[in-house]
Every structure is written in C-alpha cells, then in structure tokens.
Image (cartoon, rainbow, N blue to C red; front, top):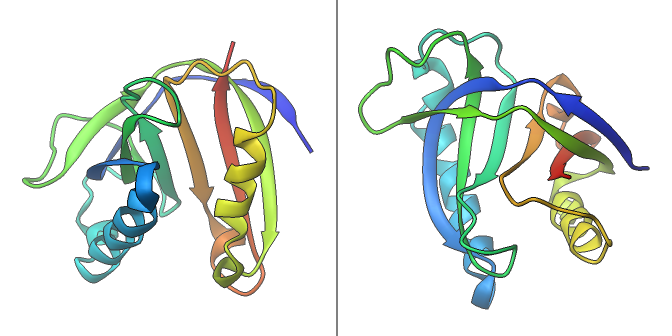
Amino acid sequence: MMKTIQIESFKVIGIRVRTTNENMQAAADIPKLWEQFTKGNILSKIPNKIEDTVYSIYTNYETDYTGSYDTMLACKVTSLEEVPEGMIGIEIPKSNYTKFSTKGSLNDNIVYNKWVEIWNTKLDRVYITDFEVYGAKAMNPEKAQVDIYISTK
C-alpha cells in the first residue's frame, strides 16, 4: 500500500558508507555497515538521541538508484552540535514521501524485495533522501515490519 505524506525536516547522527547497486555492491556494503553499527554499539554512542529507532538512510544520490549514493545508519537527535569522531550528522530536509511497508522475516529479504518493487514503480522520485525505519515493530526479525519512505515530488 502506498501513501504520500509530508515529513518535516529532522536531524540524525550515525555512520555512513558510499555504495552503488551496480554489481551487487550494496548487497555487500550495507550488511557490513549494519555489522559495524551493531558490533560497534553505535546506538549507545549517539549523543542527544531522541529514541532508539534506527533509520537506514539513502542520500547524496549521484543520479538515481543506478548510480552511487550514501547509506547511513542513524538515529534522530535533538542537535548536531556534538558529533562523535567517526560519525556524521545531517539534516534530512522537509519533503513529500511515499510510504511503503513490508512485513515478514528479515531473513527472507523482505526489505530488498520491497525495494525491487519500488524501483519498478512509476514514482515521481526526487532522489534527495529515502529511508527505512527500524522501530519497535522491526525488533522481532522473524515478524518484522519495516516502513520505507521515498522522497517524491
């Protein structure tokens, strides 16, 4: 189900990798970033955090989903004044977003499969910032719900 909503700008702090969907590069880079996030206990090191919801953010698009882009794992924060070494802080701009939701086992690639569906949808994308939300509903990996927000015109 698709629904378009406007989201106000918000600030996040987290870790980032530059990647591309070419040659399945993102399929290697993004799990590595998650591993770094988890093993490095990044969640507990983010200052001025509003909540423990993790945002998987896609931004700095070179062109569209076929070009290079940044993937960032981050949390919403109240301020970007204090950004720990090795992390980055950015402000996600106010935008219209089309929301997609996927449910099931994270091991069944439900998020990636939803992205494939999104790439094949005739959305009027702006390629500024897109993000996935891993909140309380995503904590059980067998019965996860992940919401994906795509910036659109």
